[in-house]
Image (cartoon, rainbow, N blue to C red; front, top):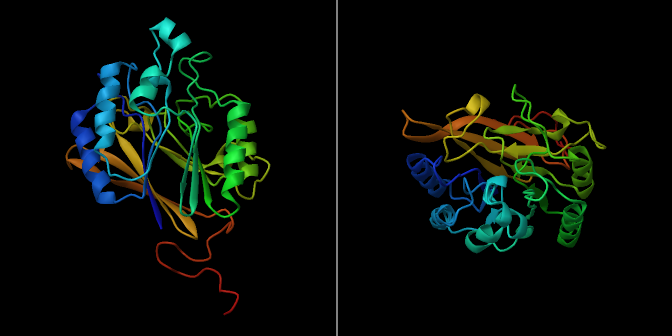
Length: 291
C-alpha cells in the first residue's frame, strides 16, 4: 500500500498559524507516509523571509519523497517588475528549481504541473498545451501499469458549494487529455476548503465510465479557510491499494488540540470500475470467478 500525505496552502506570512502548523508536523510523523504532496501557496506574499520559513518547515516533515508545485501566492503580486521578469525567483531559491516535475515511486508516477500564471492571471491559473504534452511524455515513459497522478495548485473542478469558483481555463479539455493518459487521481489546493470527488461530478467527459478522482486540500496551516472550512484547517491522507483509493479528510479541532479524521472516501481503481467487496468490512458483493 502507498500512503500519500497531501497538504496545501501553508501561507507562511501573516495568515500562517504556528500552533496548527506544529499539530500538522506531529500527525505527519504519525502517518508514516511514503510520499508527501504540497500543492502550492507556501507563502502569502512570496517574500524571501516567508519562503525561508516555509523551507525550514518543509525540511522538518518526514524524510520521504516530496512533490511540490507553486501557487499564485508564491509569485509576487504587487512587486510588478519582479512578477513580470523573475516571478519564480524566490520559489526556485527556497522550494524547487523545477516548476514541472516527475516523481517515480514503485507503483506510481506523479506529474506536478505549475498552474501559477503570473503573466496572465494574478489569482487564477493556467495549464498550457505544452504542459499537457509534458505529462503525456512523462506517463508514456512510465509504462502502462503504475498509478498516474497529476498535481496542480489550481482546480479543474469547482467545489460543490455556494462559493461558485470557476475552474482553470480549458478545464474540460485538460480533463479529457488526462483521461486519455489514464490519470486516476488529481490533487490540488487553492480553494481553501477540501473537495473529494470525481470529475464526473461536474463534467461527463469522453469516458463517463471512469472519470478521475479529484482530491483538493483545504488550507492546512493558515487562517484563510473558506466556505464550510471557514476558520478551519485540513489536509488529506490518500492510501492506494491494488483495488481502491482511500482518502481520509482530516480537520483541525482546537478543543481536541490537533487534527482528527473528519470524513472518509473510497473509490475503485480505474481498471476495476466498481467494488467487488466492501473495502471497509471485506464483505463480498460479487463472487470471484473461480467460486
